[in-house]
Length: 339
Picture 1 (cartoon, rainbow, N blue to C red):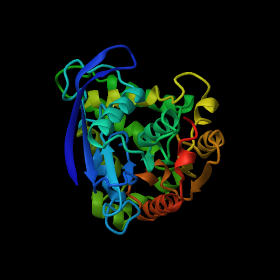
Picture 2: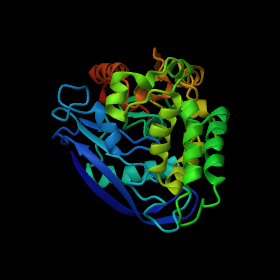
Picture 3: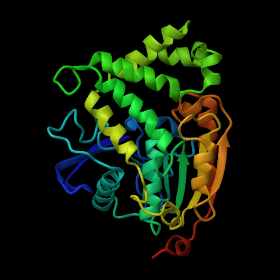
């Protein structure tokens, strides 16, 4: 893996310009001579390229010996330009993320076609937008636990996170709003995993404990996992990413069915049967707007977190789905049909 910064002055969808906008990106593998092995794998809320690595490696569907896997860090996530490293960081949207990534691929990857755009959560949102904006370029699309347009119910969840965060009087100051960060984490805790997962106290399972520590009680888990997780985050970065998520809309207020109907990529849409905010009903509805798209439930009680890599069995399901999709032939004529 190589990690590099790409920098450009970026005109934003809102009208301002983000000077010296930085996209930190990781690359596994190399672009081949045919330029037909590029994978685009954007990051998710609260994660960087490091959290995407669980699906990449020898013998996996995303094998760097076969594929050139590019993982661009989303604006606001703390690795690329963000409130934590940029004075006066403006409001950004996925339109801005995609434009920054487009410039990166033009300058560093010879404008290669995208063999697969894949992502989980906010990574899925960016992948949807790529496939809709550049149907001539994106050959395959796999979205995991994400939607092309943020639903009203999803926004209510995010409003709760931001309300908890901003209630701390230190929010917006130079001092970290510790109480607000902990409160935001507690709100998130009730949504990320399913009711069944928490009811069976899955945080006690050995695989989970090996990674995150020993949690015997619910309070142990809330303090040892969620408080620790959110206290390590930057309030401004959380706010920026949450606002990007709130405004996520591949159609930019227009007809979503028409926008998704432009997608020509071979498409697989997946979400957890127990995801509380990217629900099967919402994901199935969007999949039906994409010509030829397939929808699948991931049968798991891990809820939204099925796509995080924490569940080895769910990661294996996603890995198999990627392998399946990459094995599907895509002709140049099909991918160019929207030109």
